[in-house]
Image: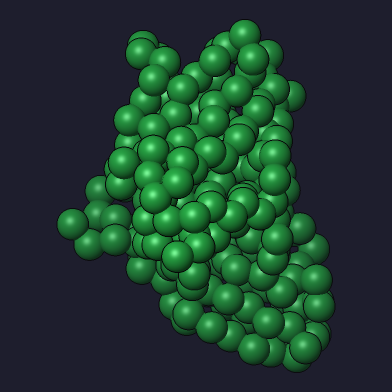
Length: 114
Length: 113
């Protein structure tokens, strides 16, 4: 069975500081991993995804994430936070690319302090 | 390309009433999903359609929830009768085929009072 754990339901960073949002997963097979962002009163938008190949994945808005199999982690980072990054971030895992068995974490709310 | 359209954006109903949500996926997307997102939680899959057939409805409370996707395009999710715990955002998503990189709609925020 798959599951996703996002450590820290709320994260606050200063504008210009490093953003680090943590995600750990459990999966019995090589996973497909995703990060989504949700702005207030909007749907989820795909930030980036890992399927196969390079373990460092670059996404939109300057975000990137690294798949570390040994740590079962897929942490999201951004070198310099911007006010517009304030949103809810969800990590998700799937065991295949059929769209079945697709699980979201409980989310991390990012606050950017001016 | 146009995104996934959902309506209404907001709905307030009393418990035991009925409600329906509508979703129009991106043109050409064969797979359509309905998710329930309760405040403070991640989205939970309710039902997945492939064209007009149901692929997965294992987490759909079938005693009160129903969904259909006529002609493999638009979809409607219905709740009858609603309970207080149904208060949530209902998200529709679609993908070209079952797979990663869904496109989500903006959701319908349901409040049951």
